[in-house]
Length: 402
Image (cartoon, rainbow, N blue to C red; front, top):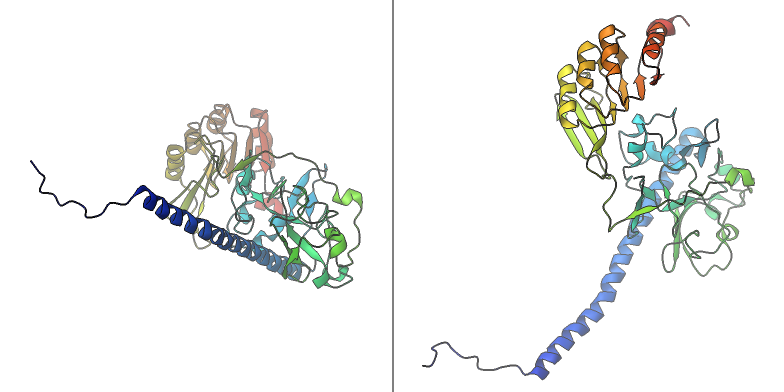
């Protein structure tokens, strides 16, 4: 029995199929380089825009302080404190996080580290796979001229003896990237461009640099001398001690790996003028929680029911920042955070009930308190000998006597 279905009037031969497939592959081969070139151009444009923003921030900083930011500030023990990128943050994209940095501590201290696990918009060069260290610190793909940005540097535009348009401040680098918060983000400029992972460069044809006048220039690989010889603006050579930087040998996370932390806060929960921001670790356990007022116009401080919500939202939190008063009721709630290592609060009521509750917090290592009477501090320390008591400001009564 014959089928009533209409039969195709023509069937393509194998040779014809091969011709069609060959034409398609030829078109793909022709179009792919154009697509790659367009993508490469877009990435270069984005990186150039990043450097323009950094150049503008450098000059705004110079206008405010009559000097470029130090490449890195050092603490009294020689440990790195903060780098040039951190100092530029208020002059870059709007962000509330700069005001939250505790500048009495190093950038990678546990109370600051979550703020350096967030990606600044101008920090990264598009197309680079490495984006964070294994510790979660987000990288920058730009580095500083050691003649301008070094240990405790204080360079001004007057130091560019050959003119600011003949000297550079920042540039793209090939590899061995530093976290954007690093206080040692500069490198030697004694090699030509794109000569290994320690050199300046990043593109096949050359690299972008921020010049001393804030402009951005693309420098070709065709220059045969070192970067410092080619255009250093007549800057004086800093001492070897000033440009010395430790070798960290950072281990990196790349784009094809699961990041150790979210590049933005995991959650941003708002209720009645307050915001709870939770910063997440790669194993899914919230490590840092921060409760604060929404905007400058909100004057409400956290209440007991707010702390209850923190306990419910992140019971395994390790570090908690809140402006709550630690009294009998709030300290009882805090005992429900069994992993808590660091607590930042407004005040602590030093009563037997509060002391008993704090003693139950077996993992508590540090109390950061806004105001505390010296006698109460001594009493608190005597009952919590293994806990560091850090008072951030003196009581008003003491300040008024001075």
